[in-house]
Each structure stands twice: as C-alpha cells, then as structure tokens.
Image 1 (tube, rainbow, N blue to C red):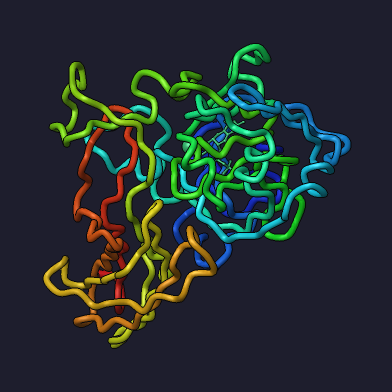
Image 2: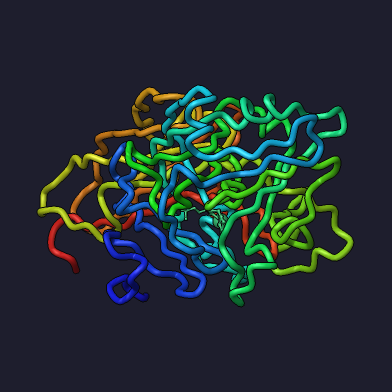
Length: 373
Ligand SMILES: Nc1nc2c(c(=O)[nH]1)N[C@H]1C(S)=C(S)[C@@H](COP(=O)(O)O)O[C@H]1N2
Ligand SMILES: [Mo]
C-alpha cells in the first residue's frame, strides 16, 4: 500500500494509508483510532475532485442559501459566527463506503477497510438556524450542497460531488456548518474554512469548502445522487448479481459498527498471558449503540464490554473490556455492536451492493500469545 510520505497534501498526517492519489483518499488503520477524539493528524481524507484554491482570509469566505426560501442569504463566515449560536459536538464522520473491501465479489470504488471514519469535535452553527433565517417555503423538501473544489478533470463548471438530504435531516440541531475541528480552525484538507457536518449519514453529505446550499422542491439530482450512487437494494440481493429492475433506496443512516482500536491486528503477547485489555469504538448512524460484545472463540461465547457515556448524540461509544484468552497460540478477537433497534453486525458481510456501501461485518483482530509458531 502507498505510504503518505511523498504526498505534500498529507504533510502532518500520521499513519494514514493512501487508497488513491488523484483524487486524494487516505484511511486510518483501526489502531490509529484509539483516542476518544480523533486527532486531525489521524483523520481520514476523502476527496472526489481536486483541491480548491487556498484561502487568504477565512472570515470572508461566504456561502449562499437560495432556492425554495423566502429570503435568499449570502453570509460570510464572520457573519455566521456573529449572527448565530456557536455549538460544539463530538460526532462521527464516516464514508458511505467504509468497509467496502470486505465485500466479495469486489464492489466498485475505493477499497476502504474500517478506517474511513473518525470522530472529531466540530464547532459551528446549526444549519437549522440559518435555514430558519432564510425561511423555507412550503415547497422546500431537499437540500443540495456545493463546494469550491474542481472536479477530477480540473473543471470548475462541474461539481466534484453534490449531494443533498431530506429537509428533516437538515433541520436537526446536530447538522452543522462547521468552521473548527478539535478546537482549531477547520483544516483546509478537511474543508476549511467551512464545511457541512451531517452526522450519522454518509460522509459525502458533509460538503467541504462549502459555497452554496440550494433548497429544492424535489430530491436533488447532482453528481453522487443519481444512478447507483449511494443507493442500495431495499431487500438483500445475491452478491455480484445485477440490480437492474430491483428497487433501490438512498443510503441515509449508516449501519451499526464497532472496531477494535487496541490491540492492533497481529499483536503478540508473552507466553502465559491469560488476560488481555481490549478497547475500541462503536457507532450506529442515527441510532445508538446499546451493546458491544467480544468473542475469542469464533462466536461461540460473547463477553460484554463496558460502554463509556457519550459526549452528545452522534458521538461514538468508546468501550473497554478485559478478556480471558484460552491459552498460548493464535486467537481471533471479534467485536460486535448492537443498536437500540436491535440491529447487530453480521459475522460475514451482508447486503452486498454494486458500489459497496454500508459493509459492517464484525471486525476481527488476530493476536498471538507466546512465541509465534
Ligand atoms: N467539496 C467536497 N466535499 C466533500 C467531498 C468532496 O470530494 N468534495 N467528499 C465527501 C466524502 S465522500 C466524504 S467521506 C467526506 C470526507 O471528509 P474528510 O476528507 O474531512 O474526512 O467529505 C465529503 N465532502
Ligand atoms: Mo465518502
């Protein structure tokens, strides 16, 4: 796998694995996600196009809110900060394709393992407050997001990606226009000066370098909204089969998932070790994680981890447990989360779809106790 060293845009990043260079895509190994708040240095990067021009004065960055509203608005970042209440929430941002590489047959797109995710403290304004100031008309049903980044070919006339959401999601308090990440001005690579953060739904809705929110009277049809983009079969289909004529739905809330963040896959312990401390994180889109269970015997028995309280809705749940290992030799640790609705992670990938969204199979980490054989 490519390392980051010779990619200038990734300077300052730590331990990311590069999945694509143009557009730039890099994920975090699971053990890089061991902090309660993911440091910027280890936050994954997903671009669909090229980078926009760097910005001289972030405070003069402006966005437009137009379409099905009574009062179209143009607001600079400075105006946003002074007119609306500033809030900070720790929230998960996860690429819709996270986990894709576990699907067989291979699905189209970047081969994410489990590291197309991070949980940062986002500071910004509720999009709802700005939309209320603009006054949605009764015809307003959907948003459409635009950013300043040129598309892959370098064209500024074509959006690199432009997705949108039902108005109800846009009006949630946690859907933010964010200008800071982990207490620092939003880094350029993560969409600075201003981006959307739409927690719980595919990361593609969280438009970086945000320039415009167009309120529409119908489902948005920009790049990333049509065809097979962010669409999955309503009912499971046989892996690799055609979706022609099959009812599809837009992927909204992301499915429940957990990762082991310590130990790292491949860790070794001294011979005779019988108790191992395991830590990780779990999240569940719009839902809440109620249980994380671990197995060292390939799913025969499960032990519950202790979940830490969340900072706020859409935070990930940090969890920890001490596990008894059966003896010296190799063993696999499996971690499985369950949400409040009772949905749990499959032991092997389910819900195959052509573009490989929402793969949430149980994370498995191999460890060895004693000398490796
Ligand atoms: N303007 C713009 N916003 C964008 C994208 C993009 O290519 N351009 N990629 C989206 C996708 S697919 C994801 S998963 C997230 C990734 O955010 P990050 O790079 O800060 O991790 O940004 C989203 N916002
Ligand atoms: Mo994404």
